[in-house]
Length: 530
Image (cartoon, rainbow, N blue to C red; front, side):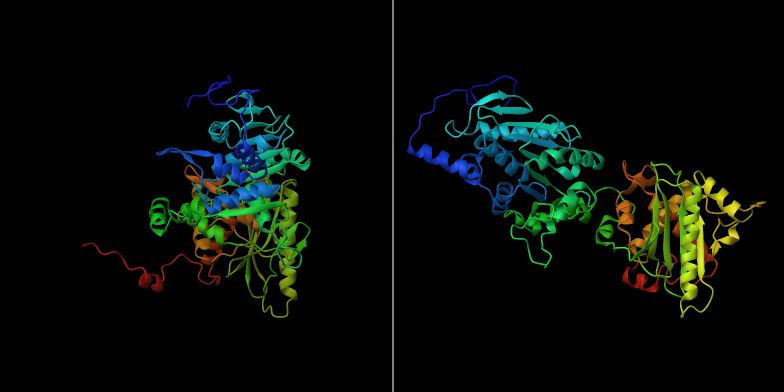
């Protein structure tokens, strides 16, 4: 149905329209005022893509959604695709505007056109109502509706300015996980003062990433047990949100046969994200998103300054320490990763975005000294500690290299790992540290991927896991998504490059070489061509 910016009195209720009343209509109106589900089941219509206008008969899981929206100030709905979450929200927003006077309802979505799609559902819901149920309209525009009871519904794209100038009574965020992470943060920060004044909030989405604001809201909403481990009385999480999760199998018309075709066409990771409500990234991450989804971080057991320690170093093990340097400004981070061989367990980590090269080198030296002292003092240590360390020596690493040369390498515990000499090439002087070319980076990416996905490398840090989930393919290489960082991943790439050099020296490191075992051959025989 075409829309205009002028009042169309054929589809809306004109101001001051007289309505005929009887006992039944008064009873219906009374029921609608107190019960949004009654309102929607009795009068709401939806647009079916094939069958046209149909009465809305919500499924059980949709009733759960509507109850959550109505009974809780804050509600968050994690739903698979095509389960009617936006339809339920549109019906509830319409009820709220009609029966709670002087309400200001704000609809936000990733893009303005998507917010308008929600508004279209609201308009369709309103237009299908009988006059004795609906309020008259003062303004009926493409992106906003104002009613004679003082309520209005406004639609906008998600941005830091979306709520500006509005005293929002109810905020509805549609498919919030698909808003860009930086816009999510800006919007959520800017809208908090409005919500703190008594506004309500409904957030709905299919999951996308388990580190964005939507995922954080969901996880906090699921944290709904008290200090004694008992469920909270109202079921709300510690952030005040009431969670509702709706995977695909709650729809009565969907079964395993239905799911099978989607699994085959989308792949397991994408299917789990879009239909089973799993927080699995759909970006082309270096590490398989299903693997990333099962990695769980641990809390640091101690700190030395700003260095986070996740495990105590074990005696008679080797240790790899790598520094990815930074300029020392607020725009990038210097990072250090520490791994224990042969298990390749991450035992320590450091990152900072405000210190110069000299401080970065000093922090690496302090880590090496801490490892050396701890191992020498351990009663089970039977020989000198095996410590290997390195740093990136190109671009920003020039400053680090200068500091190390001026400090003198022999003051650092352990052995500095440098680039291996290529056969047939004579070099007067070996450049200390590791030079990162695009080829070297891609090779290290492949090695890191193999180690993590085969469970031969154990990640402890939540910060590193987050960066791995945002470390994606860009052209012929990998790097952090826009607005994210990859300094910790870069330090890990130096670790795996250093690992391969150390392995070539004959250091025992367990099953860390890239070889095909007899067991693999037995389990996965070669294909036979007939």
